[in-house]
Length: 280
Image (cartoon, rainbow, N blue to C red):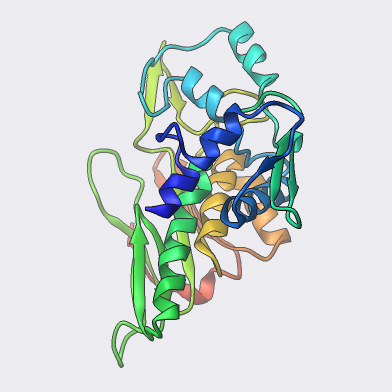
């Protein structure tokens, strides 16, 4: 699959992994697809003031949340500080005209927080090229739709409630020409010394987030953008994330942990999509 050969961090010979091994300060000739996704990633990093950062991978692994899931041990402050010196989207340069990438210092790029959404977009573009009028594409919970499910109904997509140990629908949205992605911290965490450590790592501090945001759903025109923004809002939390979504006119739905259960809030742009809400 071409997309995997370009973006994967699991295939050592993928285009992305070749860039990660490429010498610092030298331009790496890249495909248009990789250049475009890197450019979009950096733009979202700027909009979110670094809450979204494609270089955060080493910190994720340090906390035991990498692909090998090693750990569940709280790293030392020194270990975190050392790795923070290897993080920073601002040290990546993109040359769209000449289709090239460059890193200003030794970094490791991982596109997993945006690539799944882009894969959905690629499938949607393929269906568009075949003149398919109605479709719903879903990969790992990220969704893109076009047209209608039937003459009578638009596509109805459920938003999962962030419950541990069970599955339930929190809300239902109606989509037509839209892309949707969700992010949450309610299934991937560990506890140590009575403290719960989320898999959502703030690339600005090097530590797991400690706020009460359990999950967020974002609706945009492209699934890649929705995917990355959902990740960023999980880092920013229920207030800072909501304020940014409001400022940027982003359709976003926040599910927040409270002592008595969950509360929700949404931006005005999200409300038209909502067709059903779970009763407490």
